[in-house]
Length: 525
Image (cartoon, rainbow, N blue to C red; front, top):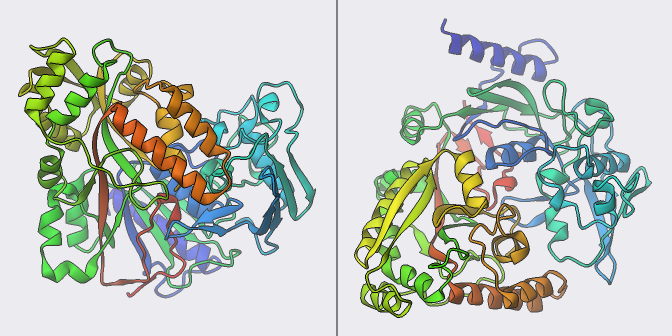
């Protein structure tokens, strides 16, 4: 037996033991949903999770007070009900008495207080304290100036009270993010810098049975969870970075769900035999080329607009995204309240050359566009490079691995960069505040170093506006102004298409990566 075969046999034995009380039962492990991850998760501790793979798995293993369903709507999770006062600053949550950690212990309000304080602690290594830092007293606690978070307390075992410094409309939805998920104190200890000693333990509908790093993870239903799966014995998530390997594994029957890569889009979408197997959704994600607004040439709005008019984005979508994307004329994706359809910058090379001449660059100029290593990014930027050359802009493409790329871009040492932005939570604020408020210049998300007093004031006003219609109108105004100022070369909002095996029933492609829910999924043997 190969090493890989031995690992799979061990994993199957673990799964059989977990589900059969230590005794393998006939057929155990046969109803395992086979999925693929593009990247290997590094840490499965909600306080430390930072990327999509880690967040997706944490959402299966752990619970927050609230959660996102497959349709992107907020749902109760640990909290059965809650009330928010008229001022929008006091939240009272009533916990579900059924909630149990995978070991069987009941989840209490004290566990929530412990988990939140751990993320906010000055000793914590959490990269996401911003999720909770609007709680009153979080700043003083995080600086080590207070022994506890003033606005965070357990009124009793099943009641949690949170008080904010000021009203913040998206706050409830942010409590579904990994950093606000609850962990058991007895599995970690009192040191905020510590993490799980062994496999992570949560109260989610799944528990982690085996983890072979860079190979696979094996999940089994949490028998203490009221939404534990009945139609599956487990989920195996295999680490398969190469797109064509994932395609081959699906076509051979070794994977049950395949995210269709752009290069294969038309082959699958145009095949009538696959029509009943395809699920799709518009992603809460935007692709763009950020322009360093502090760089003297790019500080001129005429130059930034010229670069937008130089690129035929519709052709990029047709050729590189299989025609299956939405042209971006702003940063807020379609489907989010606050999105407003508007005319994108036209593809007009002649007008682009005139704007460059007006700005003092009749002969154009040279510019560097940085990217992280990515075959898809290479194809996009090589096309963009040709479009820019046609208007006199000599674009040199610079490729760097992610950490070097991120450090240079966040420090403002590059002219331009190719990047995308995923929604952490389905609210337009998550695209506007991090990406365009001057307070977040650099590593905070605003890597284009865009600064506009009007945008700043509108974002601040929207964050404290509790009326839905008024808030969404402000979002639309902000997005329109950002598009007008052109801090980016706006590209597109992608769509995701997945092929689902006929062996699988009840699977739903989630709107948000945190919304995967396999409770109703079944797999035929």
